[in-house]
Amino acid sequence: MERLRPRHREVHIGFTKAETQKMERLLRELGEQVLERQFCQNIAKCFNRSAGRAGKPIVKWTEVQSWLQNRAQELPNVSKNISEQQGIRPSNKALGSSEIPKEEKTGNISELEFEARSSKDGAWYDVESFLAHRSLSSGETEVRVRFVGFGAEEDEWVNVKRAVRERSVPLEHSECQNLKVGDLVLCFQERRDQAIYYDAHIIEIQRKMHDIRGCRCLFSIRYNHDNIEERVRLRRLCQRPTH
Image (tube, rainbow, N blue to C red; front, side, top):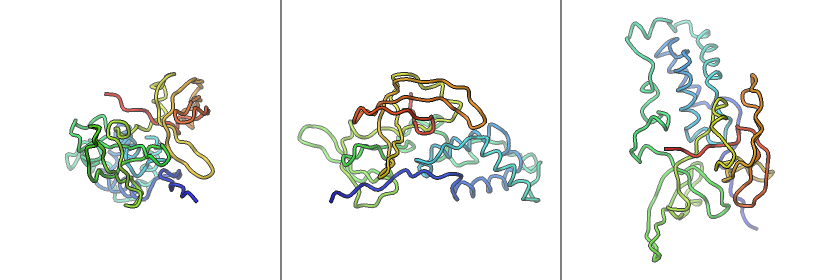
């Protein structure tokens, strides 16, 4: 019996343990300064672009701010003026240089995140590391990759040109206007036996008024691997990076 590839990007609701620990640490170190909108937006972007949130619902900056506000009320030692006393300004440096949103990073390839297409199911998975490379007689190059969340038994040789690319970018609700008909996107396909990402093209967009839940627009997409069409919400789509 053919073994199904295990899920890579399972959907969970809420913040991960690592995310809550990071937010609490920032709150203790910087005080109520972290409640500012720009700072909360930076935190949300960092979470959404991290490998640990792959496949999970996109974090809104308002959710980050709400969590921090509630936690601040539970921490009596959090001073409103602590950041001013220490001369600290809110910046991405507080999150660590490795967590700066992708568009704010330098062009150093070591700072980029990648995804690779598995030959087993044609789906795209986040790359944890490149283990080796080899040149084929055809002149093409392959790399052996380890996927995030998988062991050595799932390592694969993939074609560098056709099956490796910079990681697709999760979208915040306010960024739905960035998508247009004809765009290539990475769509989270949910089936009874698997939940993985496939390439798709947008074939129609129904713009709707946003509400308290965020974007309510509907995107009709066609999967590239089987031409099946589906109507999805923004939370299931990732945009290809632009340079």
